[in-house]
Length: 329
Image 1 (cartoon, rainbow, N blue to C red):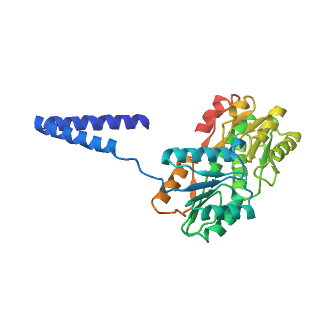
Image 2 (cartoon, helix red, strand yellow; image 1 turned 90 degrees about the vertical axis):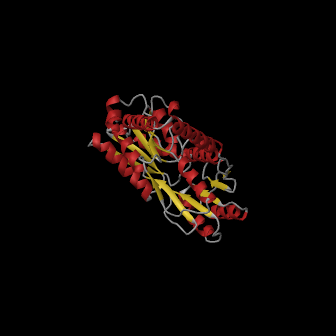
Image 3 (cartoon, one colour; image 1 turned 180 degrees about the vertical axis):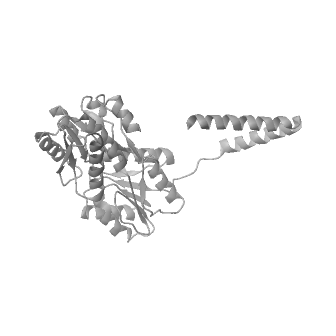
Protein backbone atom coordinates (compact mmCIF):
# COMPACT_ATOMS: atom_id res chain seq x y z
CA UNK A 1 0.00 0.00 0.00
CA UNK A 2 2.82 2.44 0.90
CA UNK A 3 4.57 1.69 -2.38
CA UNK A 4 1.39 2.44 -4.31
CA UNK A 5 1.11 5.81 -2.56
CA UNK A 6 4.72 6.66 -3.45
CA UNK A 7 4.07 5.88 -7.11
CA UNK A 8 0.86 7.89 -7.08
CA UNK A 9 2.69 10.88 -5.61
CA UNK A 10 5.48 10.57 -8.16
CA UNK A 11 2.99 10.37 -11.02
CA UNK A 12 1.16 13.45 -9.74
CA UNK A 13 4.44 15.37 -9.56
CA UNK A 14 5.37 14.42 -13.13
CA UNK A 15 1.92 15.39 -14.38
CA UNK A 16 2.16 18.82 -12.71
CA UNK A 17 5.59 19.39 -14.26
CA UNK A 18 4.27 18.48 -17.71
CA UNK A 19 1.39 20.95 -17.43
CA UNK A 20 3.70 23.74 -16.27
CA UNK A 21 6.12 23.03 -19.13
CA UNK A 22 3.37 23.59 -21.71
CA UNK A 23 2.84 27.24 -20.66
CA UNK A 24 4.92 30.31 -21.41
CA UNK A 25 7.82 31.51 -19.23
CA UNK A 26 5.61 34.36 -18.02
CA UNK A 27 2.85 31.96 -16.96
CA UNK A 28 5.37 29.73 -15.21
CA UNK A 29 6.80 32.72 -13.31
CA UNK A 30 3.30 33.76 -12.28
CA UNK A 31 2.50 30.27 -11.03
CA UNK A 32 5.72 30.05 -9.03
CA UNK A 33 5.08 33.46 -7.44
CA UNK A 34 1.52 32.54 -6.50
CA UNK A 35 2.64 29.19 -5.09
CA UNK A 36 5.36 30.87 -3.05
CA UNK A 37 2.90 33.39 -1.63
CA UNK A 38 0.43 30.64 -0.76
CA UNK A 39 3.15 28.61 0.93
CA UNK A 40 4.30 31.66 2.90
CA UNK A 41 0.78 32.39 4.07
CA UNK A 42 0.34 28.75 5.10
CA UNK A 43 3.64 28.70 6.98
CA UNK A 44 3.04 31.95 8.84
CA UNK A 45 -0.59 31.24 9.76
CA UNK A 46 -0.96 31.36 13.56
CA UNK A 47 -1.48 28.10 15.44
CA UNK A 48 -4.99 27.46 16.69
CA UNK A 49 -5.66 28.70 20.20
CA UNK A 50 -7.13 26.16 22.63
CA UNK A 51 -6.55 28.19 25.77
CA UNK A 52 -10.30 28.34 26.39
CA UNK A 53 -10.25 24.61 27.15
CA UNK A 54 -10.01 24.11 30.91
CA UNK A 55 -9.66 20.36 31.30
CA UNK A 56 -9.37 17.97 34.23
CA UNK A 57 -8.95 14.21 34.40
CA UNK A 58 -9.86 12.01 37.36
CA UNK A 59 -7.89 8.82 38.03
CA UNK A 60 -8.82 5.88 40.23
CA UNK A 61 -5.15 5.02 40.71
CA UNK A 62 -1.82 6.66 39.97
CA UNK A 63 0.23 6.91 36.75
CA UNK A 64 2.97 4.92 38.45
CA UNK A 65 0.87 1.76 38.13
CA UNK A 66 2.51 1.16 34.73
CA UNK A 67 -0.91 0.04 33.55
CA UNK A 68 -4.38 1.57 33.13
CA UNK A 69 -3.76 4.97 34.70
CA UNK A 70 -0.24 5.18 33.28
CA UNK A 71 -1.58 4.73 29.77
CA UNK A 72 -4.29 7.37 30.27
CA UNK A 73 -1.58 9.69 31.54
CA UNK A 74 0.38 9.16 28.33
CA UNK A 75 -2.75 10.16 26.43
CA UNK A 76 -3.26 13.27 28.56
CA UNK A 77 0.36 14.32 28.03
CA UNK A 78 -0.14 13.91 24.29
CA UNK A 79 -3.28 16.07 24.53
CA UNK A 80 -1.35 18.79 26.37
CA UNK A 81 1.42 18.73 23.79
CA UNK A 82 -0.94 18.87 20.81
CA UNK A 83 -3.27 21.55 22.17
CA UNK A 84 -0.82 23.62 24.20
CA UNK A 85 -2.91 23.38 27.38
CA UNK A 86 -2.35 22.12 30.91
CA UNK A 87 -4.71 19.45 32.24
CA UNK A 88 -5.44 19.16 35.96
CA UNK A 89 -5.04 15.64 37.40
CA UNK A 90 -6.76 14.16 40.43
CA UNK A 91 -5.43 10.79 41.56
CA UNK A 92 -6.67 8.01 43.85
CA UNK A 93 -10.30 9.14 43.67
CA UNK A 94 -12.60 6.32 44.85
CA UNK A 95 -15.72 5.41 42.92
CA UNK A 96 -19.06 6.41 44.44
CA UNK A 97 -19.91 9.38 46.66
CA UNK A 98 -16.36 10.74 46.71
CA UNK A 99 -16.33 10.85 42.93
CA UNK A 100 -19.58 12.85 42.96
CA UNK A 101 -17.96 15.44 45.21
CA UNK A 102 -14.84 15.64 43.04
CA UNK A 103 -16.76 16.05 39.76
CA UNK A 104 -19.04 18.64 41.35
CA UNK A 105 -16.13 20.72 42.63
CA UNK A 106 -14.38 20.64 39.26
CA UNK A 107 -17.53 21.92 37.56
CA UNK A 108 -17.94 24.67 40.16
CA UNK A 109 -14.30 25.63 39.71
CA UNK A 110 -14.91 26.41 36.05
CA UNK A 111 -13.58 23.36 34.24
CA UNK A 112 -15.40 22.93 30.94
CA UNK A 113 -14.02 19.46 30.08
CA UNK A 114 -14.04 16.82 32.81
CA UNK A 115 -12.85 13.29 32.08
CA UNK A 116 -13.32 10.28 34.36
CA UNK A 117 -11.28 7.13 33.77
CA UNK A 118 -12.91 4.37 35.81
CA UNK A 119 -16.05 2.35 35.13
CA UNK A 120 -17.47 3.16 38.58
CA UNK A 121 -17.38 6.89 37.83
CA UNK A 122 -20.26 6.50 35.37
CA UNK A 123 -23.24 7.13 37.66
CA UNK A 124 -21.49 9.82 39.75
CA UNK A 125 -20.59 11.67 36.55
CA UNK A 126 -24.11 11.32 35.16
CA UNK A 127 -25.51 12.80 38.37
CA UNK A 128 -23.19 15.80 38.28
CA UNK A 129 -23.58 16.36 34.53
CA UNK A 130 -27.30 16.99 35.05
CA UNK A 131 -26.44 19.97 37.28
CA UNK A 132 -23.96 21.60 34.89
CA UNK A 133 -25.37 21.54 31.33
CA UNK A 134 -22.63 23.87 30.04
CA UNK A 135 -19.81 21.55 31.12
CA UNK A 136 -18.67 18.67 28.90
CA UNK A 137 -18.25 15.38 30.78
CA UNK A 138 -16.53 12.36 29.20
CA UNK A 139 -16.41 8.90 30.76
CA UNK A 140 -14.00 6.10 29.87
CA UNK A 141 -15.43 2.57 29.64
CA UNK A 142 -19.06 3.25 30.54
CA UNK A 143 -22.25 3.12 28.51
CA UNK A 144 -24.51 5.89 29.84
CA UNK A 145 -24.73 9.28 28.16
CA UNK A 146 -26.50 12.63 28.53
CA UNK A 147 -26.73 15.77 26.40
CA UNK A 148 -23.42 16.93 27.88
CA UNK A 149 -21.85 13.55 28.67
CA UNK A 150 -20.22 11.11 26.30
CA UNK A 151 -18.26 7.92 26.75
CA UNK A 152 -15.26 6.35 25.10
CA UNK A 153 -13.74 2.89 25.03
CA UNK A 154 -12.55 0.40 22.45
CA UNK A 155 -12.71 -3.09 20.99
CA UNK A 156 -10.00 -4.45 23.25
CA UNK A 157 -11.34 -7.91 22.46
CA UNK A 158 -9.52 -7.65 19.12
CA UNK A 159 -6.10 -7.48 20.78
CA UNK A 160 -7.21 -9.90 23.50
CA UNK A 161 -7.82 -12.55 20.86
CA UNK A 162 -4.38 -12.02 19.33
CA UNK A 163 -2.70 -12.13 22.74
CA UNK A 164 -4.53 -15.41 23.33
CA UNK A 165 -2.76 -16.90 20.31
CA UNK A 166 0.60 -16.07 21.89
CA UNK A 167 -0.54 -17.53 25.21
CA UNK A 168 -1.96 -20.69 23.65
CA UNK A 169 1.30 -21.31 21.82
CA UNK A 170 3.33 -20.74 24.99
CA UNK A 171 1.55 -22.95 27.51
CA UNK A 172 3.04 -26.37 28.23
CA UNK A 173 0.52 -27.47 30.86
CA UNK A 174 -2.51 -26.48 28.81
CA UNK A 175 -3.73 -24.49 31.83
CA UNK A 176 -3.89 -20.70 31.72
CA UNK A 177 -5.00 -18.27 34.42
CA UNK A 178 -6.81 -14.95 34.02
CA UNK A 179 -6.89 -12.37 36.81
CA UNK A 180 -10.01 -10.21 36.39
CA UNK A 181 -11.65 -7.36 38.26
CA UNK A 182 -15.45 -7.54 37.87
CA UNK A 183 -17.79 -9.73 35.75
CA UNK A 184 -19.08 -6.85 33.63
CA UNK A 185 -19.46 -6.94 29.81
CA UNK A 186 -16.10 -5.40 28.91
CA UNK A 187 -14.25 -7.89 31.11
CA UNK A 188 -16.29 -10.90 29.96
CA UNK A 189 -15.74 -9.94 26.31
CA UNK A 190 -12.02 -9.87 26.96
CA UNK A 191 -11.95 -13.25 28.69
CA UNK A 192 -13.97 -14.85 25.90
CA UNK A 193 -11.81 -13.32 23.16
CA UNK A 194 -8.61 -14.37 24.92
CA UNK A 195 -9.92 -17.93 25.33
CA UNK A 196 -10.91 -18.13 21.67
CA UNK A 197 -7.41 -16.99 20.72
CA UNK A 198 -5.85 -19.61 22.98
CA UNK A 199 -8.01 -22.39 21.55
CA UNK A 200 -7.35 -21.38 17.97
CA UNK A 201 -3.85 -22.83 18.42
CA UNK A 202 -4.40 -25.11 21.42
CA UNK A 203 -7.94 -26.57 21.27
CA UNK A 204 -7.80 -28.50 24.55
CA UNK A 205 -6.37 -25.69 26.69
CA UNK A 206 -8.40 -24.29 29.58
CA UNK A 207 -8.59 -20.77 31.00
CA UNK A 208 -9.44 -20.35 34.68
CA UNK A 209 -10.51 -16.96 36.03
CA UNK A 210 -9.80 -15.49 39.48
CA UNK A 211 -11.94 -12.47 40.42
CA UNK A 212 -10.50 -9.71 42.61
CA UNK A 213 -13.52 -7.36 42.86
CA UNK A 214 -11.19 -4.39 42.42
CA UNK A 215 -9.61 -2.57 39.50
CA UNK A 216 -6.55 -1.37 41.37
CA UNK A 217 -5.03 -3.35 44.22
CA UNK A 218 -1.55 -4.72 43.50
CA UNK A 219 -1.58 -7.06 46.51
CA UNK A 220 -4.92 -8.65 45.58
CA UNK A 221 -3.94 -8.90 41.93
CA UNK A 222 -0.73 -10.71 42.79
CA UNK A 223 -2.48 -13.00 45.26
CA UNK A 224 -5.09 -13.93 42.64
CA UNK A 225 -2.35 -14.74 40.12
CA UNK A 226 -0.55 -16.89 42.69
CA UNK A 227 -3.74 -18.86 43.34
CA UNK A 228 -4.03 -19.62 39.63
CA UNK A 229 -0.38 -20.61 39.36
CA UNK A 230 -0.89 -22.99 42.28
CA UNK A 231 -3.48 -24.91 40.22
CA UNK A 232 -0.95 -25.57 37.47
CA UNK A 233 -1.41 -22.54 35.21
CA UNK A 234 1.81 -21.65 33.43
CA UNK A 235 0.53 -18.52 31.65
CA UNK A 236 -1.18 -15.60 33.41
CA UNK A 237 -3.32 -12.98 31.66
CA UNK A 238 -5.21 -10.12 33.28
CA UNK A 239 -7.86 -7.43 33.24
CA UNK A 240 -6.37 -5.37 36.07
CA UNK A 241 -4.69 -2.00 36.41
CA UNK A 242 -1.16 -2.96 37.49
CA UNK A 243 1.72 -5.28 36.65
CA UNK A 244 1.32 -7.27 39.90
CA UNK A 245 0.07 -10.43 38.11
CA UNK A 246 3.25 -10.28 36.04
CA UNK A 247 5.34 -10.18 39.21
CA UNK A 248 3.66 -13.39 40.38
CA UNK A 249 4.27 -15.05 37.01
CA UNK A 250 7.91 -13.99 37.04
CA UNK A 251 8.48 -15.42 40.51
CA UNK A 252 6.90 -18.73 39.46
CA UNK A 253 8.81 -19.01 36.20
CA UNK A 254 5.57 -18.72 34.21
CA UNK A 255 4.63 -16.57 31.22
CA UNK A 256 2.56 -13.38 31.32
CA UNK A 257 0.19 -11.55 29.00
CA UNK A 258 -0.10 -7.98 30.28
CA UNK A 259 -2.71 -5.31 29.74
CA UNK A 260 -2.97 -1.54 29.16
CA UNK A 261 0.70 -0.82 28.50
CA UNK A 262 3.91 -2.60 27.56
CA UNK A 263 6.14 -0.01 29.19
CA UNK A 264 7.42 -2.54 31.74
CA UNK A 265 7.92 -5.41 29.29
CA UNK A 266 11.68 -5.03 29.60
CA UNK A 267 11.48 -5.74 33.34
CA UNK A 268 10.12 -9.22 32.57
CA UNK A 269 12.45 -10.48 29.81
CA UNK A 270 11.72 -14.19 30.32
CA UNK A 271 8.10 -13.75 31.40
CA UNK A 272 6.47 -11.25 29.05
CA UNK A 273 4.69 -12.62 25.97
CA UNK A 274 2.73 -9.59 24.76
CA UNK A 275 -0.29 -7.55 25.84
CA UNK A 276 -3.20 -5.46 24.57
CA UNK A 277 -2.27 -1.75 24.74
CA UNK A 278 -4.40 1.41 24.75
CA UNK A 279 -3.62 4.56 22.74
CA UNK A 280 -5.84 7.25 24.31
CA UNK A 281 -4.00 10.34 23.06
CA UNK A 282 -5.72 11.06 19.73
CA UNK A 283 -9.18 10.76 21.29
CA UNK A 284 -8.24 13.12 24.12
CA UNK A 285 -7.08 15.63 21.53
CA UNK A 286 -10.43 15.31 19.75
CA UNK A 287 -12.34 15.94 22.99
CA UNK A 288 -10.34 19.11 23.60
CA UNK A 289 -10.91 20.35 20.05
CA UNK A 290 -14.65 19.67 20.38
CA UNK A 291 -14.89 21.83 23.49
CA UNK A 292 -12.84 24.58 21.85
CA UNK A 293 -15.36 24.53 18.99
CA UNK A 294 -18.25 24.87 21.44
CA UNK A 295 -19.47 21.28 21.21
CA UNK A 296 -19.60 18.22 23.46
CA UNK A 297 -19.76 14.94 21.58
CA UNK A 298 -22.08 12.58 23.47
CA UNK A 299 -21.92 9.84 20.83
CA UNK A 300 -20.35 6.71 22.35
CA UNK A 301 -16.91 6.16 20.82
CA UNK A 302 -15.67 2.58 20.45
CA UNK A 303 -12.19 2.59 18.99
CA UNK A 304 -10.54 -0.30 17.17
CA UNK A 305 -7.17 -1.61 16.10
CA UNK A 306 -7.92 -0.25 12.63
CA UNK A 307 -8.26 3.34 13.87
CA UNK A 308 -5.29 3.07 16.23
CA UNK A 309 -7.11 3.22 19.56
CA UNK A 310 -5.86 -0.28 20.37
CA UNK A 311 -2.61 -2.04 19.57
CA UNK A 312 -0.89 -5.27 20.48
CA UNK A 313 2.22 -4.66 22.52
CA UNK A 314 5.76 -5.77 21.82
CA UNK A 315 6.54 -9.48 21.73
CA UNK A 316 8.69 -11.12 24.35
CA UNK A 317 11.79 -13.07 23.36
CA UNK A 318 10.07 -16.41 23.92
CA UNK A 319 7.38 -15.75 21.29
CA UNK A 320 8.53 -17.60 18.18
CA UNK A 321 8.63 -15.99 14.77
CA UNK A 322 6.08 -18.55 13.60
CA UNK A 323 3.65 -17.40 16.29
CA UNK A 324 4.29 -13.76 15.49
CA UNK A 325 3.61 -14.46 11.81
CA UNK A 326 0.38 -16.26 12.70
CA UNK A 327 -0.77 -13.27 14.77
CA UNK A 328 0.11 -10.90 11.94
CA UNK A 329 -2.06 -12.75 9.40
